[in-house]
Each structure stands twice: as C-alpha cells, then as structure tokens.
Length: 168
Image (cartoon, rainbow, N blue to C red; front, side, top):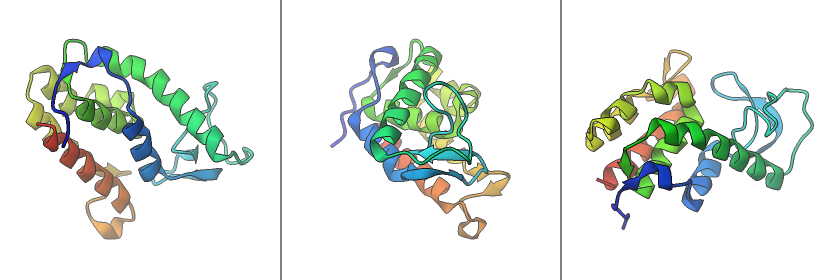
C-alpha cells in the first residue's frame, strides 16, 4: 500500500524506488546511443555527464556503477530547480517520484510549462495525474500507437499515471 501522506515538496528527495524505476525504464547502455528522440544518451538515460558536457557518440563505454553515479548526479542537480518549481505544494513520496521521473525524462522546461505543475499549484491533484497522459509524443509521433516505434514512452507514462492516481 502506498503512503498517501503529503509533505511540502521542498523536504522530499528522490527515493530508492525512484532510481530502481529509472533504471527499469531507461535501461543501461555502456556505449552511447541515440534515444527515441534522437538524443545521444549513455548509461541510465544520461544525456550529459556530471561536468555538464553532452554525451557524444564517440565517448568511451562506461560501467553500470559509473552510469548510476551519473544518474544520481543528474537527478540531484535537477532536483534543485524541480523543488523550486513546487514551492508551497504538498506531495506524497510517490507523487514526488512520479513527477521527478517525468522531469528527468521530458526536461525541466517541459515540467515548468506543464498542466501537471499548474494543477498541483491549484491543489487539483487528480487532474495533475491525468495531465501526465497528455505527454505521449516524441518527434510528433503518438507513442500510444504501438506501430510508431516509441511504445515504451507511453508504457512509462501509463505507469506514472497509475502510481500517481494510486497516491490520491
């Protein structure tokens, strides 16, 4: 059973479950590759190294431990802006992890202008969860259509939605 207790978002941090889910969906790749959106990625969904430099297709392979360190560094850096966007908002740990995962996947800029954030600030928690389902496109392809070759994006959004609704 999920804990539905809500806390001010500024006191929460990514849980162990967040990182397990991140690796589940992002997978691990020792070598750089282009993701569904064509962005060069390595490790566990990292598009930049901890020093801020972009991953390049010519970068050397990394091991899983390095990939996990990069993901933690990326998340902890991104969490500062993420928390700042949530001033005054109360979330459960589950909701926090769901929206942080969205931000890791779609970026802070998309989060900042999202219906999710708007709804959270208005105290409309269920509507914020439902807004997750609006984000199913990659390069103008609807990922809820299996034949568009980005089905995993939709599966991840549905899981975020289910977890979010379960926390209400």
